Length: 335
Image 1 (tube, rainbow, N blue to C red):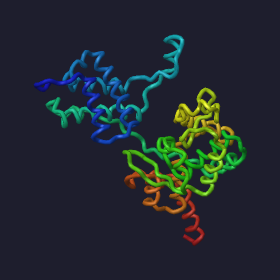
Image 2: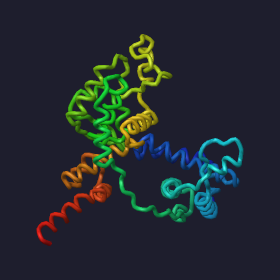
Image 3: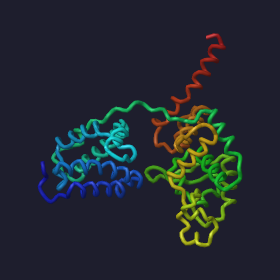
Image 4: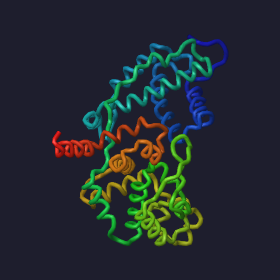
């Protein structure tokens, strides 16, 4: 039911909501971008049904229809040459993606009701979220971790030095890749580094001696003017001509991207014989090692920048080896 008075279009309302997230809630730009992408799907759905001229065109029937659409929609993987090939590559949206789409819509609708009074009731209450199975962080086990570190220690060319520094930095600090890539090289001048994490919160992370030496060797080998701590070496970018006078004009252009960091993990993982892995697995690996070595969830949460202890419980699930070792000792004691 429409609320009396001037109201924006649905697209304008979504823009107002994401602006509110950025300014009032101080959400990270990455979080805001994700909400924009997720709500963009709802905008297209509503527009196709003639319900986008005004935000108050949205009603319970539209919301329920969208839930059905999300539950039955299929993602297209890769570009095919025709509909047959596209259909062959199609697959259902997974539970995690469905939940994210619906969480974004529910949050928007509740904001529109509580903060703007564009609706007579809370339409977000009509949204049922899919239940997700409990996920255990995929840490690197001891053997592949050892293989990776042993393989990284060889080689002194710039790419190798950069890859070694990045992997050891992520593994020793537990940083998210989104926290590591914005760092400038001056951040590596101390044993402890200040990073900016979720919610724009700052925290101090520690570096192991091996990670400090790797960073020092990598930075000593660089001749480019970029302030970025981790740089791309792709020849299609400025960093392909490190030290070239023209690089000084745009020194920021060679900052390593998230896609570039993933490519590094893919390459070094294959070279070490452990297969591809994701940069975030290095964060999970540190969390698991901390729990195995100390069993102190407060220490683990503080090191990884978690605001509470709930997330840390997932690392404890990974450390079943400690539980087995405890029972071995109990059996040795005659129990």
